[in-house]
Image (cartoon, rainbow, N blue to C red; front, side, top):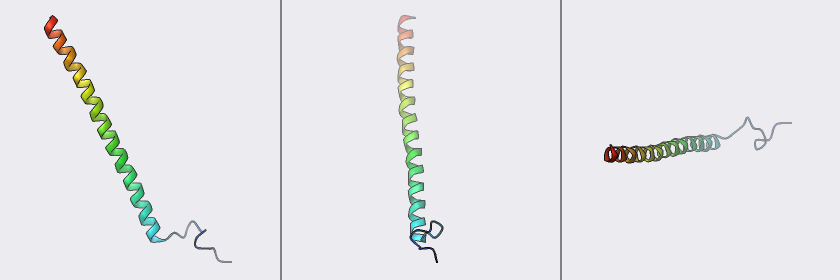
Length: 61
C-alpha cells in the first residue's frame, strides 16, 4: 500500500513549504519589531525619569 500524499508528513508540496517559510520569517520579524519597539519605549521612560530627577536635584542643590 502506498502512502497517501495528504497523510504522509514527509511528502509536502513545495507550495506548502514556501508558505510555511514565509510564516516563520513573518513571525520572527514581528517578534524582532515588537522587542525593538518595546525596548525603545522602556528606554524613553527611563530617560524621562532620569531627566526629571536630574532637574529636581539641580533645583534643590
